[in-house]
Every structure is written in C-alpha cells, then in structure tokens.
Length: 232
Length: 232
DNA sequence: ACTTAATGCGTTATTTTTACGCAAAAAGGG
DNA sequence: CCCTTTTTGCGTAAAAATAACGCATTAAGT
Figure 1: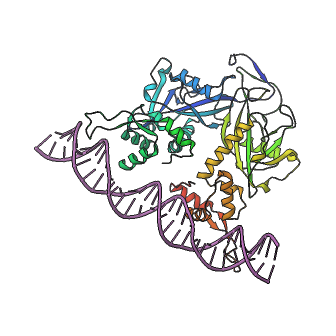
Figure 2: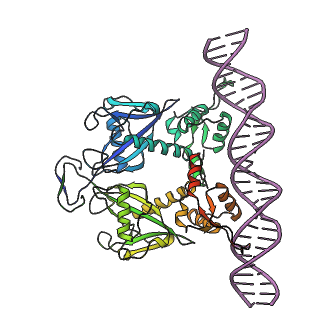
Figure 3: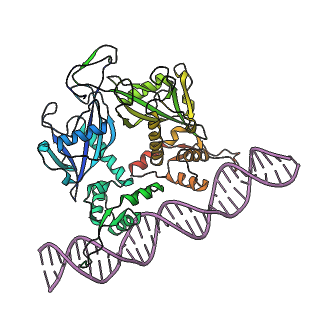
C-alpha cells in the first residue's frame, strides 16, 4: 500500500497534494462550521479545516472522507469538491496544493470522540483567524453554499429527517441572510413538489401543531429529469 | 527556477499535478472545442485537451495559461478551473491529478502557428474519442458551460466585440440546445441592461438593418453589486 | 387574564413570462 | 421582373409567477 514513509524519487519536482473539508452544520438558528485546532507546527494552536495529505492510491474524495473521519469521527460524509487552491506559498513546509471540499451534516452526526478531541463547531460570526489560507477557503465555501442552496436541494442534509416548514425557512434565511414572508415561503416550497408530509396530522392536532415534512428524493429525481430547476 | 530535470526526493509519495484546458469557440452556428493531437506516448496520435505538468513555482491557473500558449499559441486566455480529476489510474505513467480549466475564446484568436501545428477546432458532434479521461472532462465542461452561461455574462467572450441580437441568440441556442422566441429574447436581453448600442443606427438604416450591440462590463458590474442575477 | 407569537389557509395586486401580430425591407427563385 | 420567403424592429394580450398582506385559532409567556 502507498503512503508509507520512505524515499521517493522523481525526475521533476512534485507538489504535495492535500484535501480540506469545510463542514457546515445548523443548530436551528445559525450556520456552523466544524474546525479542528492544530496540534503541530506550522500554525500550531490555530484553528483549521479537517484535512491532510492525499495518499498515492486514493482519490481526492476518498482522502477528504478519510481525513474527516480520522480528525472528527464523522463517517461517510457526502463531501463535494468546490475549488483547488494552488497558491505557491500557501504552506510554509513545501509546495502544497489543496483540493477543497464541503459537506452539509447534522450536528448530531459529530460525536466528540477521542479523535475529535480538538474538533469544535463555530458560528460563522465567531470563526477566528484560521491557519494557512483557510480564511479564503471559508469565504469561497460560503459563497458556493449560498449558490448551491438555491438550485439544489442540499439544505435538507442540515435538518433532521423530519422537519417543520418554519425550521426549513429558518435554514434558508440563515444561509442566504435574507428574510422571506412565511406564507409565501410555505406556498413556494409545497408547490415545488419535493416535500412529502412526514406523517398524517395527528387526531389531536390543533392549529398550532405544525405539519411535519420530509424531503422526497424520488420526486426530486423525477422532476429533475424533466428539466426542472429549484430557484430561490 | 523550478521545474528542471534532476533528482527530487520526498519522504512520502507525491502525485504529479497537471492542468487541462477545455477551450470553447463559436463560429456563428455551432460550439467548437480546441483539441491537440498527441505526438508522444501515452495515447500517441489521439486527440486531447491542451495541458501539461505544473511547475513547482506556478499556480494552476498560470500553468493552464502557459501550456495553452505553448501548445496552441493562444495567449492570456481567461481560463477558469472547474474540477480536479483525481482518479487513481487516469494516467498510465504515474499517479497524476489534473486541475481542469475552461475558457471561451474567439475563433480568430487562435492562429495556426508553429506550436499549434496539431491544434484543431472540433464541433461538439465531431469530437473523437479522446486520450486519458478527457471524454469525461469534456462532458463535465459542457455541463458547467451550460450552467454558467445562464448566470454569468460569459457568452460575449465567444462573439466579436460588436454583434447583432440574432448572433447572440444563436449563441445561447447553440450552447443550451434550445430555441427561444426571437422577440422575447430581444426584450429580455435589452431589459437586463448589460448591452449598449455599439453605434447609432446609420442614417441609411432601414428596417432590415440589424442594430449592433456590445457587452457593457461597467453596467454589469454595477448591477451585480446591487445583487442582481442573470437567469435564463 | 392579558398579551404575544406561531400556524394554516387563504386573497389581491403587481410583475414577469409567454405567445403572437404586424409592417417594412431585403433576399431568393423562376 | 414578380412573387415568395426571411429578417428586423416594435408592439400587445393572455397567462403565470411573485409579492404583500388578512384572518382565525391556539399555544406560550407574563
């Protein structure tokens, strides 16, 4: 297996390749991002995204998922690459280019295990100055998230399986930093046809009992094939 | 300067890093893509995208532009990266990951110089089976182009400075593979506010003399700042 | 007991999109 | 040369989507 320490010789200089993961979460009020505190130089003590060096026999996506699990305990996250950062001096050790990924996960999926001793969720407004060029990576990830959330039903990955319309609206408002009219949001969402009622309204339901929904991936796949776009 | 042949030793295996460029053009009727015929193994004789190994002291974008000029004579193209391909066996020589870029250029900008002896434009429907995983790269580039053209005014990079509304519509129709109503397209485009009349209609202009427009980058920048989206 | 906030289910006005009509002028064909 | 077809500019009317807001009920807070 590749990746073992030893001596590797090339006729031309090779950059090192890493992956980084910007992991977004949502606590019902604000968007959070998962950071780990670096235990070694460079940038020892600073916060950074989970990530690390790519092994010679894994793809970027595999590397991202592996590093994520090693450093935060989070397994099988649906990571998606969004940009490759290749500034010449972004790492003081050697030339390193990094394939940056993002993923949306439920807060509950990250348990503070042994590995994750130094992992912590930060609200967007309490994120400290980060190691390497991770400030720039975060800015870009947030922009990508704002764009994607408008055209792909990825927001549901941040909510529990079953959620109320208000929770969904709060999520969209937190990400996009806008306010929607509650009734228009409700109508628009339902008309899209990608939600199902999670359970029939219970018999004792009163007006104040909110309806519960879940994302319907099958319906979305159908609609998408017919050439439909979300658009918010 | 880096990049010279020699002996380079690392404690861990390093993949090689390349860039590839998917260059789109437009001849008034169909979308074209610029390919070069490989002169050496592997895939000798097969067609592929311009591109090559990244030097140790250049960014991915710089590498893409350099290789593009070396192989096709095309200078200073506005390349933009869209995906990093990292399958383990995508290159038979060694582990290679490639940062793929695209650019939109006017056909006239590519002159068949010495370097570009083997460069040729292909219509989308005459593209042969390509080297490496370049078939996959092309599919993804085309999808990205279709998305981007709807939200960013990049189409103008494919047209002459000054163009008629019909030419612009033909371009959109060729890329998106749809048909628009001529009058609705005309109204929508003008209402966006990102076109200026290239010249006052000449005195001898009759009804059949089409108006000429040019893309107004300043107006677009203004509108964009106010939070405006193109949307087609 | 009173106020405040959340939910479901609407309605109406405005804006945007879509589908066409029409006349003038050039181009093409026999 | 005459007739048909195509292209262009400038419209309009219907349809659809969006935005703004009303209201009754019920729970929660004070």
